[in-house]
Length: 186
Image (tube, rainbow, N blue to C red):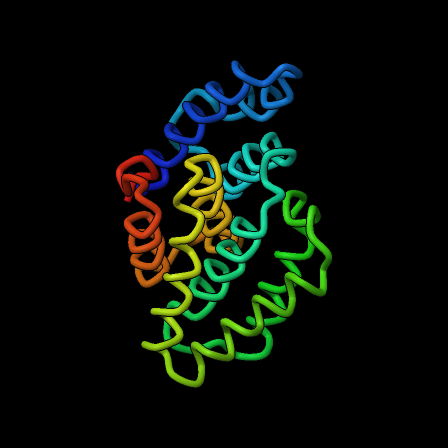
């Protein structure tokens, strides 16, 4: 539970800093609910991370963000070593419904996500290495790098729980992106 509280606090800090630098201040609404106690639900946290990503939507249009995010989603889905068809379809629907990822044609997202999942299922270690290399390409732009991690959290936490294997993937992605895992409570 403490990890979620740290992530929630970090998310609020990021929300406030993004709200301060954006001209429209669109990042404000989500910070009002549940801002008191540390007992906020995981659904609220995922909602807050989604709001942060949405506030950056105009900045997240590059191919490197798209490709790194799809690799991140595939790694999160396959974190336990397997992806059954229902899980694949669920993660794909999360991707296609994500407001920021709607910057990209759905078929591009679907193709890249499934390519990584297929590689992970064929040879997990090789697929993991290739996905992490794809993720690392987003390290050049800190805003995109953090957004890739946030996207991973949103997908991992969609069910209200982040499994230890998913946490490990997120930690490794932080390292690949030169982002401090502590920044996300990992």
